[in-house]
Amino acid sequence: MAAFEPQNPDYNAEVRKRFAQQPYNMSIGAEVSDVQPGRVEVILPARDDLLQHNGYFHGGLIAGLADIAGGFAGWSLVEADQGMLTIEYKLNIVAPGLGDHLRAVGEVVSRGRSIIVTRIDVFGMRNENSVLCATSLQTLKVMKLPSELLSDAA
Amino acid sequence: MAAFEPQNPDYNAEVRKRFAQQPYNMSIGAEVSDVQPGRVEVILPARDDLLQHNGYFHGGLIAGLADIAGGFAGWSLVEADQGMLTIEYKLNIVAPGLGDHLRAVGEVVSRGRSIIVTRIDVFGMRNENSVLCATSLQTLKVMKLPSELLSDAA
Amino acid sequence: MAAFEPQNPDYNAEVRKRFAQQPYNMSIGAEVSDVQPGRVEVILPARDDLLQHNGYFHGGLIAGLADIAGGFAGWSLVEADQGMLTIEYKLNIVAPGLGDHLRAVGEVVSRGRSIIVTRIDVFGMRNENSVLCATSLQTLKVMKLPSELLSDAA
Amino acid sequence: MAAFEPQNPDYNAEVRKRFAQQPYNMSIGAEVSDVQPGRVEVILPARDDLLQHNGYFHGGLIAGLADIAGGFAGWSLVEADQGMLTIEYKLNIVAPGLGDHLRAVGEVVSRGRSIIVTRIDVFGMRNENSVLCATSLQTLKVMKLPSELLSDAA
Image 1 (tube, chains in turn cyan, blue, brown, yellow):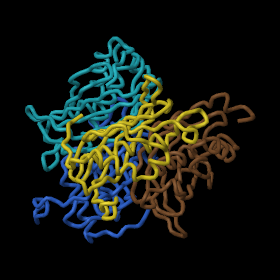
Image 2: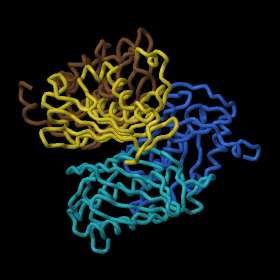
Image 3: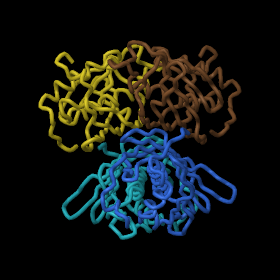
Image 4: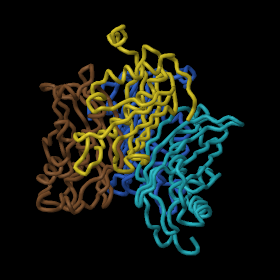
């Protein structure tokens, strides 16, 4: 992975703040577990309503988690008044999403002025065991944050 | 869209039964609104915990809904003892997911013996208004259903 | 397919001119067969050096042709001083590329100010027979053409 | 990258033989530069008919090269009587393909019994300089080679 210089010295706090503002992240119980410049880890603890009849995490959650991890990996590299918009992503499901939590690692592959490309791996975690369950390639667009998100209270 | 012959005469009931067996579908409140051979529509009514701070459906839900609609479009074409596994999909978000419900239309593009390819469009719906918010291309694998899903009680 | 208004009244001539300026298109022998606003068809006649040992068109050519057809479908909708940059695409190969020529049909699915999304189908053509061999979803970026491409001689 | 055990002890010679049998690879002048279990490098020297008017390699070639590198990365892991079929791939173009040659590095991410997923990076190379120009995620299907490819003469 390439090393990237953050543009916002408060990238770590910024990522965690923006993450917590998204009700979807909160409703599924996702948590930011690590923030580096161009690299963000997110985990999702298992919960009855998130699992399929066979005890696996649903593909929609795996995709959502990948999208979040990649999106915030990109977000860690932009200015304080900028945010991320997902243009598209592609996700390969390579094994059932099984474990007591999922762990998604998003990394920036390429940072352009307006387009950021990320790569995300999602793992099913149980005790010491980590099994790759999905891998993704994502395209993000850098956007100017709307003013209501830039106030002190935001 | 090509016309496809279903292999299972009860494809309609089968799709609805398998859909209802997936707790994720139930937990987000998704509903099957139409089933044709090789074409399935799913809707997702808005609900507070499904929306972002800006009132939009989260991308993870749009992806999950696309995955479901495409997966069951494929499922409508296979034998009674077969099911669908998502190998991968790619999703373009083209507009915010806005409206009182989302509508996802999955259609089979190509049916092979072991691989089925589907195309899915997701629309934000408000009154008479329908706005394309995402489009997806998905690869499914035909699998033999595990025996516990084939019992009379299943 | 949605109907789109071209911004450049000379979109048809523009597409054909820009197409002919790309040596790759010329070297493989691709030809523009139809231009509508937001929809472009390109064909590729079979030639010994384009085929595999089994007589099929190589996947790289199918991908290249899809990229071209989608790119010019987008190009048909932009201003005279704008062009297209491919950000990414995803391609499903659903059947061998077989026939005396390939036919790629690119259509714009969504036109934003800076991002255009297209969908492309590629068919193997023999006599009256048309077989879908690939389907693709592509993301384009609208760019300002460099000045050397805007002179009268260009 | 995970370490993989090859199933065919002659995987190196096998990859080079199958590569040389594809006329497309020969016609564009691609060469295998390295073969490891689950990892294959391919290079493509610049040539007038491969370049655009601006001196860049065309996206179709970059895609074709990525497809080849990923396909043979998968091929290095299968039995002697098996080969690879590309189901689909997605490619992000992140910079112009510029240099005196392209270098594509394909790596297996996940090996299933019938499905192999690979990741490919393509670099524009000039002197000591290496610039990432594309990154790709690819799905392959393991297939039984047709008998005419398994004879001693093949």
